[in-house]
Image (cartoon, rainbow, N blue to C red; front, top):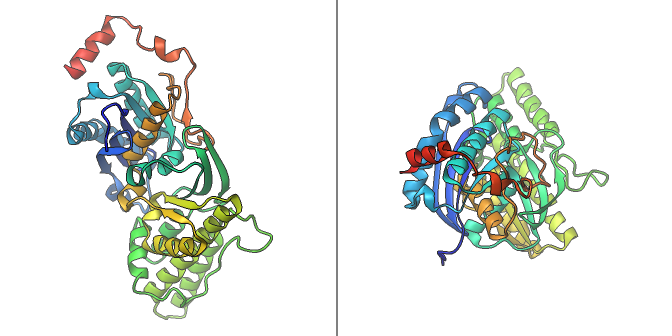
Length: 373
């Protein structure tokens, strides 16, 4: 049930190649508008930062207007504006941060620079209601694979483990490239794997030995092993069984991810697991996590696939939580931080900054009227 006094927040996400604008009221999603430039990057086999930044610039205002229209609210009604200030591609982040600052300034609304990874956790509130405290989260995307413990999503996020080389999503993209499947690799490998045998080829499981870091991930050895296996087949003039390779590779990735996540839950005494990030849309990861969590008596929370990939709704969700918990807004000096640590769920400004942010001359008032008359 949506209460009118719950914070109405607009969120902007531009950390990579998706321009996402979401609007939420409390934990209710009102709009989730996304403009993707993935097709533009596909011919380069990966995301080109300059192209991503340019695409964000062109998509920003139309996407914000589409979200406001979809939510049936006016910009004046907002209680705050949240934006991903990091981590991500510096140029891409800068477009989102600049836009958020401009809207916050013109509307006289509080600004919240939030963390991309914490947002991926918080988005689950839009699907399954308030997050349990603490929350154990496995975040798996193109740039990150992390195990995080969040006693308070707005102020206390603790990293238990992370990828020490290639993130899971990156490994999917690279293997797809070796198999000539195009970019991005995740969805196509997921699709082909359904028709293959996950036990056909015994690919290595990185960092699963007794002396290895229990919660860290490594996929570069797996990636090399798969690439060499494919090369050997081709060199021998044999046909590569693409579906079996896809299924066996995918199994190696999701086996390690779910095994470590369930172990972390048991070790920390947490009885539920949240999985987020773009790779959380993978059907085999969801199925194996469900199976292992059930066996271990752990409740699994995974948002629907559209909310797992980068979107503005997740940023708005964390922004709304910041407003609800009276967290200090960011100030207008907020900058993009491409390596913002996950231990900083948001970037608060100096205590006095916001009260002075709008003591400007009449130029400010005129621009406000022009923008939102």
